Structure formats: C-alpha cells, structure tokens
Image (tube, rainbow, N blue to C red):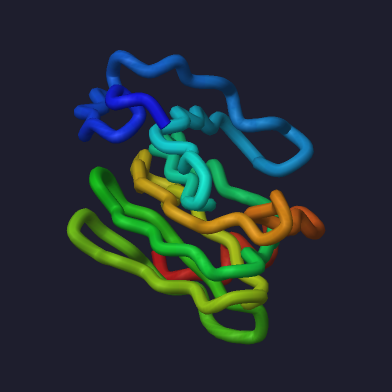
Length: 141
C-alpha cells in the first residue's frame, strides 16, 4: 500500500462527478455523487444523493444496513409495513441489514442526504419494486 493510499483525504462533493440516478431504481430527478469507495480491507461506500421534489428511490434493502445523514431539505422514509415518516436536516437514520425501505424528497421540497453502507460479497444494495404513487402519497404532508 502506497503512502498516498494511507493518507487522509478531503473530499469536496461539489468537485466530484455526479450521475443521474438510474430510472430503473428511482422515480423523478435524482443526482448521485459517489464520495467514498473503501479500499480493502474496507467495504464502505458513501454517496451524496440529491432528490428533487417528489423524487424517491425504489424499495430496496442493504445486506449490512445503511446510515443516512440528511444534509438539506425535507424528505420522507418508509420501512415496509410501517408509516411514512418525515426527515429533515440533521436527522440520522440507521436502517438495519435486510430491512426493506425507501427514501426520497417530500412533494414540496428537494432533499439531500449522505448514504453510507458496506458491501457484502461485493454488493451493497438489493433493488426491489418501485414505490407506487399511492404509497408515496400516504405520507405526512
């Protein structure tokens, strides 16, 4: 391992390349900015994810769980079989391994969060079906 690999890094999200969230996994306009991909032995990945109003992820689960840190705007989260809940800047959400859930912006506000998760056997997410408009609109507005 080189000395550069062992050095701390300062990552500025605004300077990182971002991509449109794939329509297969997201509804609405979503930008994903990769921040960290851990180098062995780490299996940590982190990204800044920006959702425009009404945008959201599909239902999904993480084999080793997921930590979300809301950094801007107002959003919604839902765990399968439970009510939709509002999230705001400063909220930290821990989703345990293999818990089916979704998250995204509220209808009236964009929302940005940092998502951190570890990979298991090279996979950090299992994408499932899309969240329906009815499921999305059942939330607190």
